[in-house]
Image (cartoon, rainbow, N blue to C red; front, side, top):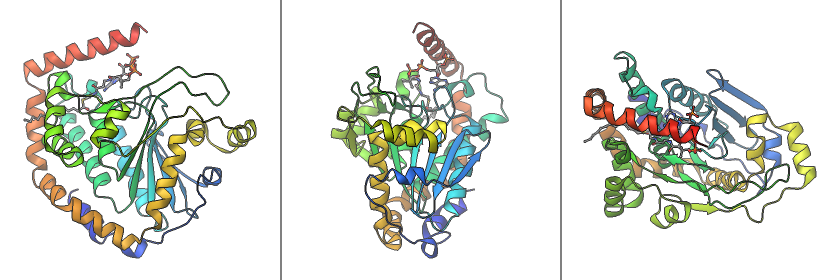
Length: 341
Ligand SMILES: CCCCCCCC/C=C\C=C\CC(=O)SCCNC(=O)CCNC(=O)[C@H](O)C(C)(C)COP(=O)(O)OP(=O)(O)OC[C@H]1O[C@@H](n2cnc3c(N)ncnc32)[C@H](O)[C@@H]1OP(=O)(O)O
């Protein structure tokens, strides 16, 4: 599994497949003209490509929280691979069909009283998601509309650019006021009584720097959008106060877009993500991929070299009595909180 990674950065898809495409800014026709849909593994992921634009969208679609199960991890990898093999695509927007949760991180139920055959497969699938995103020849833009704790934050950090919704009331597409929602992002594992896996912690260090990462990892800090921006955990924060789509646009999009991403096409976060995808797609793909190699190849090689040991350590760690006890408590609290709403 590991070998294709660096070759994907160096040569596999790379340069012969790279032909940048142009779009008009803020062009919703991009979404209208999404023509090729790939849905994989019971549509846990919705993926659409627009070859003319050179941009794809990959939306996680596992209600209620896009928590990362073995199957969702595999679906993300399958979908990304399909997009990746299309030589006409240069950028991907990684999004969620859930407007308030990007991804809740690992499916914690995978960790409780785990099946000993499934657990290593599960961990391997998460490692693969990281490798495939972080090492992709594609420029991947995270459109973070909602919460992104723990491995949800990892997904975002493995992208090339992160745009986060800044909160606020905003309007729904049918014109009603939307309940205020302020998403958070961070590696909160210590709050679950576990530590972030080393490669995930190191990714935070590379993203926000040593000292801020050291503190955030210890405290399990979940950053609200503006703090995430200040720390450098996200690259852009978008508020939707001034965003009110016209009825005509809504009507047109209702007819043209599939349900799960219809609202996303109207969100400013998604439009910004599209602009950023466009920006990356304009850069010489050879130069862009080579620069990605400079910043990412060493850490990827290290991660791949320690992959088996990481899996072994993870499996034995998770099966410890105290860890199981902490996780059970955590899940009970999560369910209780959800029921009390
Ligand atoms: C020295 C080195 C040591 C190395 C050791 C390595 C070991 C590393 C091990 C593990 C690494 C783990 C990384 C992770 O990703 S752990 C997962 C962490 N995730 C979380 O803590 C997030 C938990 N969820 C939340 O905080 C909220 O759900 C939130 C995402 C903020 C959304 O809140 P809200 O909109 O209010 O939604 P609800 O809380 O009501 O949730 C809706 C339903 O979704 C279920 N849910 C939520 N999160 C998860 C999850 N992670 N897994 C499974 N299910 C989840 C929740 O129970 C609700 O479902 P229901 O209504 O059926 O109860």
